[in-house]
Image (cartoon, rainbow, N blue to C red; front, side):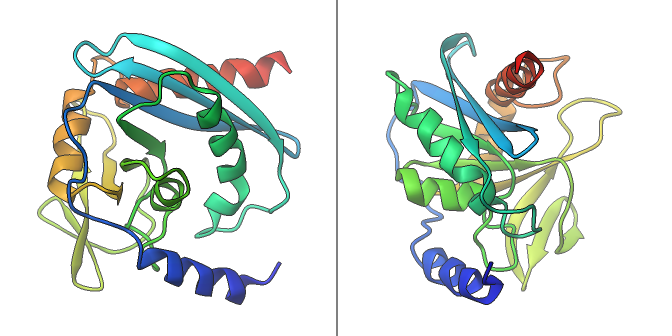
Length: 205
């Protein structure tokens, strides 16, 4: 695996990332999450109504992992299964929430950004841990650029880190995620449902 080659590819792709709101009215929103069984990646995607967060459609796909886990390059391991699951959907969502970072990445090419470019869809990254950057008053800066918000979705819960992936702004990313929280769940509802589905699928293999 040529890490330097992948770094250069990420830098090229990062130039294509749009961090302004490039979409119309939001009717549907989806979450996508992965689980693993040996070398198999299981990607689960759930599309919900944006109005009430009720699930509309669920799909999944399995793919053999051809790339090992390497921090900063998760999309190369997981995106083939994500793309396959997404392409099965009859109801393509207006926004896709990805379990991972968007531009909160050393080369501005986290999984949400990479998947957004591959699928040409607005994406938001939701991460459970902070991989880097400088946190100041709830904003995560990397190379002096505001790239994510620290967000507490419920009381006493650890924070989530919300970053734009593609075709969406930082501010709007946070506003949308706030609207997707259905307590007592910590994760935005589409991502919570996708996480639960991915876990169920893994257990059933």
